[in-house]
Image (cartoon, rainbow, N blue to C red; front, side, top):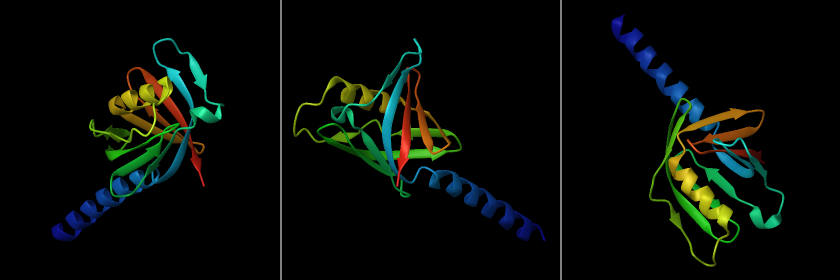
Length: 134
C-alpha cells in the first residue's frame, strides 16, 4: 500500500511539473517591455523591433532578433525560469539597442507568468510581454 501511495505521489509531481512547462512550449512574439524601476512601458510596433522566442519541451529555446538569431537552454519549475547565461547569437548584422537590451535582461530573467495568451518574463529590471503566435 505504501508503494502504491508513493508511486501515485511521484507521478502526480511529474505530471504537474511537465504540465506547467508545456504552457511555455511554442512561439512567442515580444510586444512590450516595461522598465520595473520607472514603470515606463515601450510598446513594440515597428517592424524593425520584431523579437520572437520559441520554447521546446526539451529545455531548448531559440529566437529571432531584428536581424540575428539566438538560442540556448532554459530551466523552469512552477513560476520560476532560468536561462543559461551563455546565450548563443549569430552576428550577421549589427543589432539595434533594443535587441542587446532584450538579451541582457533575458539572461537575468527569473520569473514567468502566462495569462490570457500572454507570457510575462520578469527580471529585476524589466518585464517582457509576449503574445503566443499560432
